[in-house]
Length: 375
Image (tube, rainbow, N blue to C red; front, side):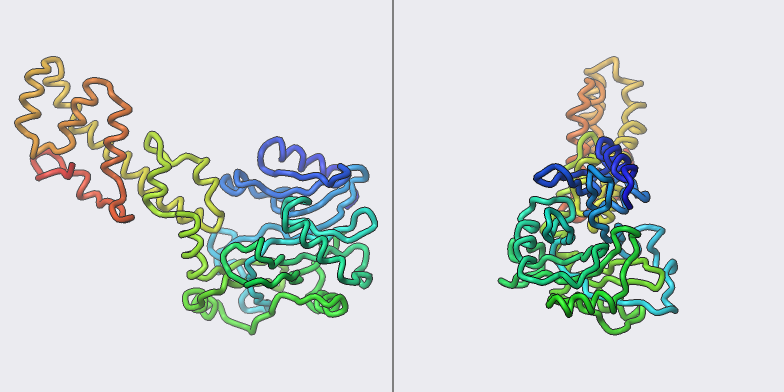
């Protein structure tokens, strides 16, 4: 893959905000990875999928390290629905370890390790120093090893204690992009003296989904199919801890709302495994906000058209129907006076998730004459 076109395209994507890049200290190497904006916008193509720690020599155009393409959680999108995979053919199930991705590369006559998007992260610095303890001469020049970096400083959720290690996940040919077989990876790892990610026993899809619900203190599984595709299955325990750590609750999403919308910047900052849940919360809250605003428009506008030009008469009418109108009384004055900001705040307060539970529409959308509207 000695082709400057790979680099030019990625640099264009960096400018567009779909990728970010880091440079080696001497400026000759570039590493690329996708951005939160890419994930949020679902901007996946051949370039963004294959920018997950891929490293190129800026001077020669050579691919220095080729890594996993981006792969998704089971059911995350139409591409990874369970029925799209060949479950009737052989597949490998590996433990999904909870560390940082490490990428082996060769530079300045030595082996080094980058993390997914950086030559200079704490994980890169530690792993580069650590890998010097091992003899990697058995590796062909074209081979890129991919690691899980396990160390206290790189802890995400699972606590591996004080242990520090590099666990081999897979290997790719940097000149062709092809993946080496599991048996070849195991042979190299055994010769070098590094552990390999555990290969678990065969399980059916039903077994996996049951384990997903039952297992605790375990991140999940990676399934590699015979056609080379991978998919992740994370345990419900792990996702529940991730939600807490990300403070992903209905109230947290409500707090991020502005003008009846959950900003794209907020959603882009949510960890990608949790984004479907954040988007479900978004749909509920934005839908409630829009329905309350429409309810106000439909119920208040006729009153204002009839009495809006006579404020004393309007006041007497509304004051005489406080119980019946509920929040519509306040809304009528805010609409009449053009106080859009206060109306926005009032509606947002109405849809506040009480006890982190969404308000029922039956509490929000009670019309005059139908009973009390919660205010």
